[in-house]
Length: 122
Image (tube, rainbow, N blue to C red; front, top):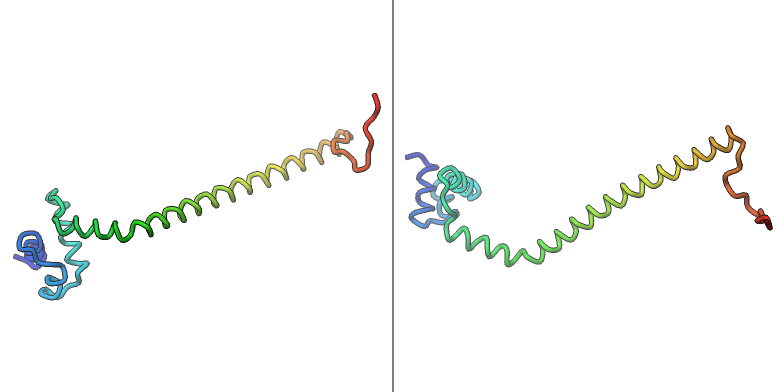
């Protein structure tokens, strides 16, 4: 039996920890973790109780930071959307200004209100 299979077997059936297996086989804990996850995925095996309890502990500890990260991510997305909208509105205003300039020049029609002009009394 090769090292991978032996380590996975010892983790899943004998209850060794990643740390124990890492020191026993001379590989990192993340390597052992990867081997176990790949083995479980290939054979469609459920997660072990230890894996589930570890995830629950992480979720309890990281719930506030996850919410904060989500809020920051949402804010960054909203800022990006608003910046795109602002850029679009600037281009729209420039386009309208250009259209008015062309119409006034080519058609000799005063479109913009001149400052200081009075309304007629009709």
